[in-house]
Image 1 (spheres, rainbow, N blue to C red):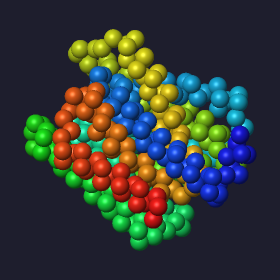
Image 2 (spheres, rainbow, N blue to C red):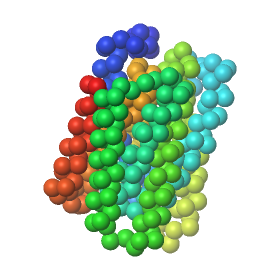
Image 3 (tube, rainbow, N blue to C red):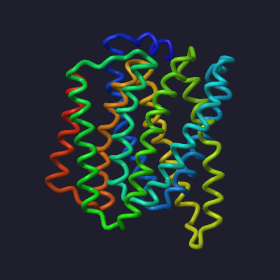
Length: 299
């Protein structure tokens, strides 16, 4: 299967498969984010999800996929600090702001920086029409964040903290998207990178979560938390795995932009499951986000 996928890179079939994977990543990442922000404390939930997908990846990394090439160990060493920084800032942002406020800022910041970095690292270039699509998509995302900010009842100081943390999280999104794209292209077998990535990435945060759990006055039951963590671990494979594979098959910038249609799915999840209102303004902005993605794709 690895050779078949690698053979699709640079072809029309590979391009459309990458588009499908990026959109799958958008949907599943919105679900992943909602799980982290939902019923349980975001610090605990992230630890449960990391523990689950790290444990599930271990037998595949150690016994199924080809062993990493020597140069990959340096790349894997960079995975830990980059993704740890992303998860720390995301958990802090979720602890201070509503999901529909924090998530659009994170996802709006990430793709713009990713497109710029990909132009330098991978020599990718967007056409004028595609840049128009990027502007439309990101403008609508930040406008959506603005509408959500007006509707929130969080104090101004706490809101500014949440927005600042969300912006820094978005910078980490751009960094890990580009770094992971480089990593998955640096190995002969993309599934080697994916298996080792999930195993390594699941190591540290469970310890942070355990420390956070010990400090809590009102500790939640562990069984329901771990059940959700297991579900989140499965979703992580569809979310992070899909977008990384998309960057292997096609351009990094386009995959990053298309993934940020996750904001549309996040708004719908916030409406249906977290009981957060959508309204006409949000609905129109969600349509503009989708339109921006279409313009990027067909530009």
